[in-house]
Image (cartoon, rainbow, N blue to C red):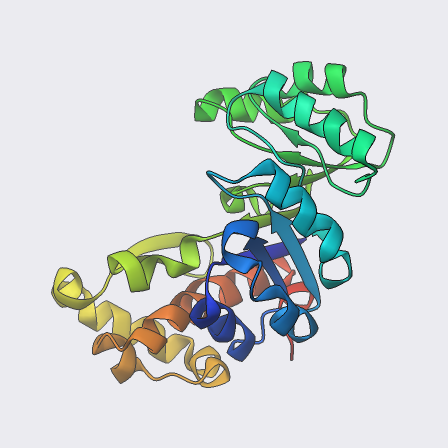
Length: 255
């Protein structure tokens, strides 16, 4: 299982590189100027169109930068299967045959319209309601490969070959993140919001001291809310130990 960490600017990409992350997901809207600089620094780059994208510019980018990424999604429209299918056919007609289709809404119905070849990589997009999402996932055929777009909560679900997450940026943006307890995650607040949680934060910083050293930060820097430390804290306190627990560490982090 590969976990792709979303990055949207130079600072986040540099933080991921310093943490030894192998796999990153880049939005065309933010990465068109950076992908040349960073493609050699990660093992796998997955490109997505992103929100409010321009299909023509995205298609130009896909063709011009083909050597700089491993995977790319088609241009898709949230919750709109028909529009997404039209863009898929448009890309095929343009000779852009390497993008992965994105299922929107009713996954099984979308697949029946798409008819992908066996072993194709298909991305699971937006669907309304957790219960409906889980029901649709159970119905997916087993002869395809799946990437879960923003589906990191399903990281141990064996249906997925890969998933991606932007949750690691939440500490720097909202002073909140998940911390890995050893078998599950718990919410942790930082800064003023987390004053009463500092003893618990210190405990987990000590527990995952080796991870903090790997990413180059200290417990004091996290408690003091230094921006660089907040960017890297979820990697050390959540994703590194979580992926070790599930046996996916080597696929996602350099030694």
